[in-house]
Length: 93
Image (cartoon, rainbow, N blue to C red):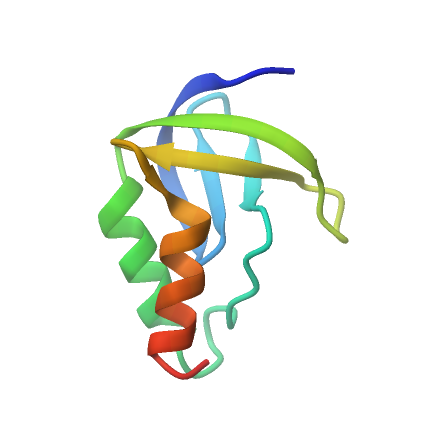
């Protein structure tokens, strides 16, 4: 499939993005609390600060358990899965 450049137009939670192509994707290997569960809003805001209205390098690596494309994503060379896994651990979730 290869790497594509996509603009992020929305963040659902700390692991799920909405791309300009209107495709909803999840970050590969990232499991965070959903919004409405303690920590969920904090992690969504953190991800949003990194990606909202920015161009991402996205590569589909598979599908999550709900059927959404699972992706490896980078913004300005920063691996988003790594960022969110660290944040999840740092915040104690």
